[in-house]
Amino acid sequence: MIKKAVIPAAGYGTRFLPATKSQPKEMLPVVDTPTIQYVVQEAIDSGINDILMIIGRGKRAIEEHFSRNFELEAQLRDKGKEAELALIDTLPPGVRIHFVWQHEQNGLGDAIRCAEDHVASEPFAVLLGDTVLESYEERPVTRQLMDVYAEKEELVIALEEVPEHHVSRYGIVAGEDIGDGLVSIRDMIEKPSMNEAPSNLAVASRYILPPEIFSALEVVEAGKGGEIQLTDAIRILLSQRPLYGCRINGRRHDLGNKLDFLKSSVLFALKRSDMKDDVASWIKELSASLEG
Ligand code: G1P
Image (cartoon, helix red, strand yellow):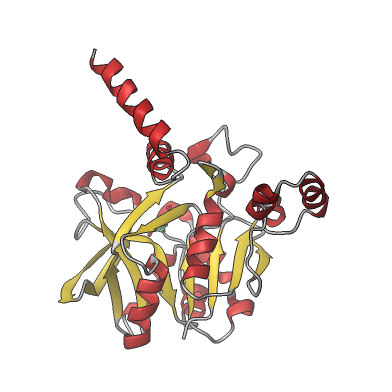
């Protein structure tokens, strides 16, 4: 049973400068909601109510977003703005968010290391804070992985096919399909070149990890970019135990990428009943003007 989620959100967000010079990339809004709120909601909708966020310098806005703002609440209540009041209620009752500080930014693996005291000896979910995963079914993507874990009780990672020229942006796996959307993973490599990549199946921002990952992170050496890579630590475990990949029934929105960010904002607006019609007619006008 997975009860805890870890959300690393300490990275600088250099791909989104200058917007991220003084605000966390995880707070960039898609329509009107910060990216990280979608991620937290995915964990909650998957049945997790204990969330640990790994933050660093310049990330205070995330803490504030998930704390109560009594002054603003009082003001909205006085003015009878009930709808707005509901919008700033960012955490349902019973859900607890904890924060831990990553002092030096030394890679995703190093960030996960900061979760050791909190998750202790339990398996846990990892959701990267700058990526929203849209599910094509009722179960959120993290829940899809948790259900695989419930059956296999082994490491599970989310996988998504990417175009060949994008493999160098991701962790890429080698393995065999074993049915039900599962892949038995033989090997994985962090951000390979197109020639080195064993497939086009990319690690897609969600993981279920066992507590043994922490001992692997202790011994793993700096990898790609001179940083401690989670992929390399998982690879150590892979020599000792099975690793399952789950082809997600959904799609990934990498909001650290400018083009994806723009596309996602439009796609998410099209899903909103209060915006859909206006946005659709604007897109039609725009596309007509581009053709004409
Ligand atoms: C991280 C992981 C990589 C994974 C990617 C998307 O890279 O290291 O293996 O494919 O997230 O989930 P980052 O985007 O943090 O550079």
